[in-house]
Amino acid sequence: MKAAFSFWNERIAPVFDVARQILLVEVESGRIVRETEEKIPADNPGEKAGKLAGLGVNVLVCGAVSRFMHEFITAYGIKVIPFISGDLREVMGAWEGNKLEESTYAMPGCCTRARGIPGCGDGSRQCRLYICPSCGHRRRFGKGIQDSAAVCPRCGSIMTNERR
Image 1 (cartoon, rainbow, N blue to C red):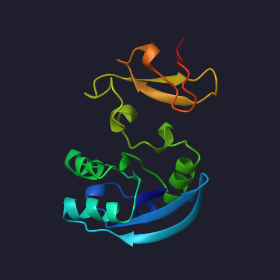
Image 2 (image 1 turned 45 degrees about the vertical axis):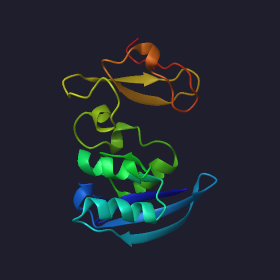
Image 3 (image 1 turned 90 degrees about the vertical axis):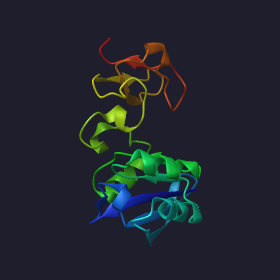
């Protein structure tokens, strides 16, 4: 599997649409085994998405991304994890350890709207933290989600609202 992290000055690039470089990592058995820096076109969304696909990218971790650019990238079957911020190496470690859901790495604003989780799309609702009683995984969902729909992405158990 290959993941791409858009970066600028050793941090996740704040806006992917104008980013000019990525760190491409290859993962085997859940561990990063190879890293290479790649230049990507900054001006043409089609060329940028095509370059990612040509490199064999499966996952893109980035800062803000326009809906237009997001659609170009996902059309190639690439999963986008948008609205992430922070030190490049810290974000890579969090991604490798399945901890990017933590609000520590979310850009300012609604953490769930940024990831496209239902219930928080208009920005007017607040997020709620859910905890998995089976494995302890924590995740934020929009206020409009039904408690029975909060399913743990790690083990599949129904999560519980932290306020209960």
